Length: 172
Image 1 (cartoon, helix red, strand yellow):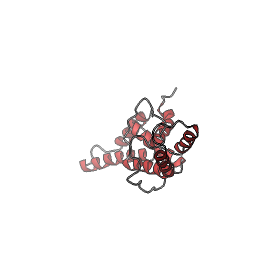
Image 2: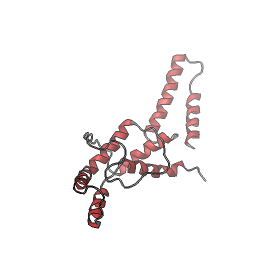
Image 3: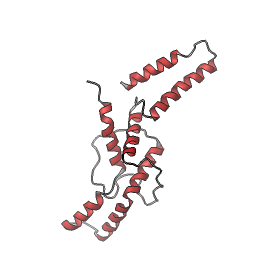
Image 4: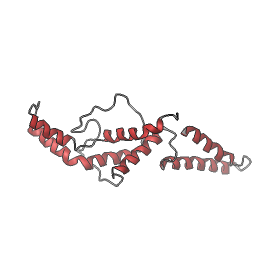
């Protein structure tokens, strides 16, 4: 549906470019049309690709969490990729590939670290005090409590996908 809307927007905009105008003017007008579409994607007004849809959904997710602020960069010891301390889920069985803006990805990681750092540091200390297999129910309760306070980037990505899925369904 959004791809058809993009085609319609492009057709309308291109039809307003005078084919007899000098080539430099036509090129400039065409470039402006594409720039306008890019701005619409940036604002979430046009979600004609998976990248645009998920970028918008991640931004909305961050805003709803109150995380659409500048976060300090995580320290070198912070998790960068892979499983985070306390991560209890294995992700989804299917992969969804999307190219998100690097600034947005960095903001998600910084926000997750910012809200989870105390729990991650406590988990690391807990693990130092409990090496090997832990069988004590009391110790596992403490671990689960700390792990529940860790919000991973994967949780944000999955929430954004859940948010975007209704928009991806074709109209009935």
